[in-house]
Length: 502
Ligand SMILES: Nc1nc2c(ncn2[C@@H]2O[C@H](COP(=O)(O)OP(=O)(O)OP(=O)(O)O)[C@@H](O)[C@H]2O)c(=O)[nH]1
Ligand SMILES: [Mg+2]
Image (tube, rainbow, N blue to C red):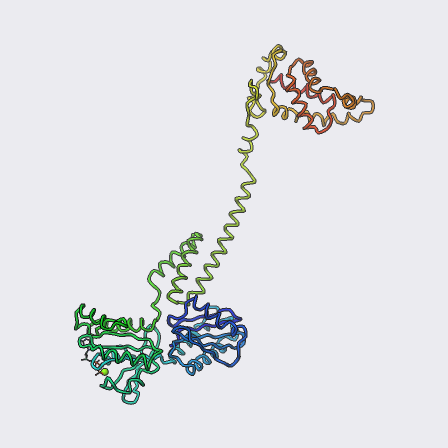
């Protein structure tokens, strides 16, 4: 029987249709490897074929399009070559642009309908064999569908439909288990059903028919069925199973209800037809769509992947492309979403909230040698005029060393000096002004810190020598130029003003 049709365009798979279980995706990869050289350089006007396990492949190329059919071993090159040529002719008629087959369309549906006609045209054969009086004709009559024809006097043939696929079923007409016409009867079968009566079985008779199948229908599939099981017990059935060791025995009764569906099930299994997708497929599809809407990308991708696995397992290839595309689309969307998220995060890292900036600026450390803490500008409580008036001059004059300044505080103070320094800069260029800096530079023993301390003392304040040194150090760092005497004056003045406000 015709099981699968694959069409490649420019060496890429453009279309696949599956009538029955055949190549899975891994097996297809192997087949593509085998026919790769033909795909790259098709040999025009010739159909090639070769067996692969229990299947056969037939392939033929036309221009940049390549056709691959998968059938059972029983199908002959004469039959399949004719079918393949018909399929190619139809393809050319429906798709002047070969790529158009990739897209869902009425043309694509028309082409698939044509493939179904070809599947029917192949007249896949199901032959019922077995001892007389086993129920063969009853079996045949229950499922035959359509016009019956006779093959001379020994067989009757009728069409039958199983799972939307078309077959021909054959029933032997002679009351002779050893007729020579049996070999003619089974020849070319896709499926042989060996039926025997469970209540009156004979192992030698069963073996005789098993041999017939092996000899004259070696490429067919086989099912062994114990009929009339309504007439035996479960134990008796187990005994039958033990007696017919080589093959699994199916249990059947053609009396009563559901006998047609029981027959269809047996044939379906025997031919390895597609089972149809399981019920969970719909609920999974539903979940996948919900995840997609909610933009839960990982869940959606996983669920679509499960659906893709099911489609491959059940070989329902019509969903294959759609699901594959959906997964790729979601992966792309997820990547874009994550990039956007990362960008946003990076941005927020560079712009800290104002509050944090403020907190950093106002952090206060304790003095290394203890003592009172200088209140920074931000933290300093508002001083009203009254408080300012209460500051006693003798408190400023106190001889006790005052450790009110820290190096950090010096930095803050220097900001003011720097701005003042800017203001006095033009003076530097007044020609008649003494250049004190030059004098200081010439005198290497000049002690800035001591000089600063003296100037502070002059202004009725006090600062110990180590803090004066720090002050000078910071002035040099901040002003980034040699110090002038007037810098020290400005610094001392500013320090004393600051002291007055504390
Ligand atoms: N109890 C019972 N009887 C059955 C069953 N199937 C068929 N029969 C009966 O078995 C008898 C033989 O049935 P057929 O269908 O003519 O058997 P056959 O294998 O075609 O016989 P030949 O063509 O004469 O070799 C008929 O009387 C059927 O009604 C079954 O499942 N259970
Ligand atoms: Mg009969």
